[in-house]
Amino acid sequence: MALGVGTGVFTGLLPGIHINLVAAIAASLAINADATASLSLAVFIIAMSISHVFHDFLPSVFLGFSESDSALAVLPGHRMLLQGEGRKAVLLAAFGGFAGVFALVLLSHVMLPVIKPVFAATKSHVWLILIAVIAVHFLKNRKPRAIALNGLVLALSGLFGIAVFSLPSINQPLLPMFSGLFGVSSLAGGLLKHSSFPVQRQSAEIKINKPARVAKLLAIGLFSSSLMGLFPALGPAQAAMLGTTALKKIRAEAYMFLLGVIASSSMLFAVLTLYSFGKARNGSIAVMGNILGPAITANSVIMLLLVAVVAAAVSCISVIFISRLFSSLTGKVNYSVMIWLVTLLVTGLVAFFSGAAGLLVLAVATAIGMVPVLTRSSRQLLMGCLMVPVIGYYI
Image (cartoon, rainbow, N blue to C red; front, top):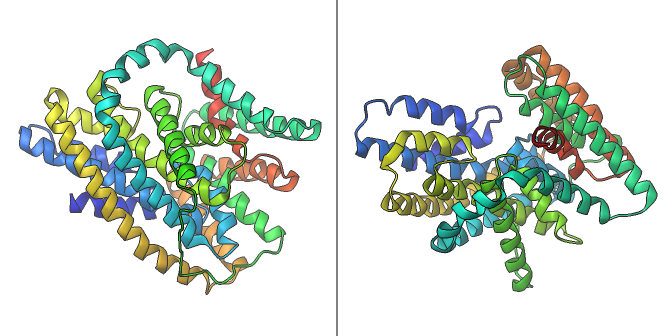
């Protein structure tokens, strides 16, 4: 388990090194392995997956890197970073992550009997759910100007997503797409506004003044992540958009907590769906299912859930220490210099993993991502890059 947590730290802090790749390598070691060895590899994968979720928020908040799981974290995270509260943003996500894992484990015995029948009854209606999420999002601000601008953002990102997924050969298309839509565009927007890094507060005191509000966020996060686990088209970012749409107003602090809940619980919920009807909506958990095969039993599921709780606790502690390092380094770097260094690093990673086509995607994604930055429209609708292609596919 310790090796899994450590590997998750590595994959979380280094964008482009995805846990699915590491899980696939682990699966290659399971060929002809006995039941004990297979279970050990499964423990490694679940520990790595949970650890990755926690540490993935660090580059999202401090550097603007974003994979699909943490794309929306760039928005409130960067805003808190410019207020000197980058470390608090990461810690809120980490605490939300632990709350999500712990709550899901406690509720797992209630969820397991209903997962399969709910999936069977609703699996053909995912496109209706996505349309409803978008519609409710538009209803939150019904001013003509807002509707027009939000419609423009949705149309541009949706058409862009269709175009990207139609490219004949591009490796890891989500890396340049999300890094441009959410990461580089956020940094460029800060540069245009002549922002500067304030000194980051090392103390990140988190008070729970309204326990009922925290419980509501936790419930919304668990519900959103369970939908994501049931429907193949929904990912953590769409679940986050669904969760925030259910709230009239949400502060950046609450947003980060909610994103932590969704990211962690959706990863663990995949274990429950794997056991219930043999499918996991997460790549690394699906690989774990292939390793265990028919050997996945109630006892093995209980063991994996307990490992997830321990991995979440250890990862939470790890994030507390690593975020202090990130925070101290960020406060000592000139904002403009930081933006150019991160942009060059993003460009290099995209060139390495996705080639020339990836660089083109990154450039177009950044341009589209600047539209809501300049017009102050909804940046959540940039998730149309995934939602519109999915709706088109199911219709």
